[in-house]
Image 1 (tube, rainbow, N blue to C red):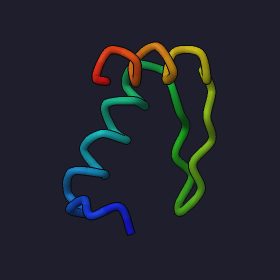
Image 2 (cartoon, rainbow, N blue to C red):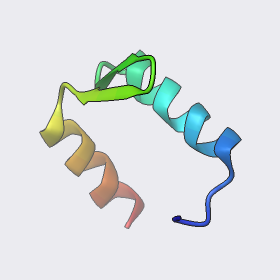
Image 3 (cartoon, helix red, strand yellow):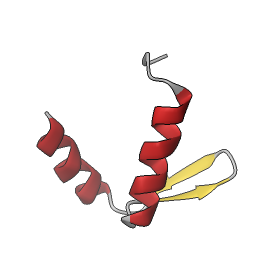
Image 4 (tube, one colour):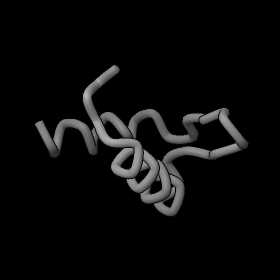
Length: 45
C-alpha cells in the first residue's frame, strides 16, 4: 500500500526491534517507544 518492497519493511522493523522501538510477535507489531519512533521519523523528514 505504501509502495515499499517487503524486504525493506522487514529490514526496518528488525532494526527498530534491535533499537528497542518495537516488538514483533508473528504478524503483530507492538510499539514500545513511540517517542523514539517520532524522533527517528523527524530525522528522516
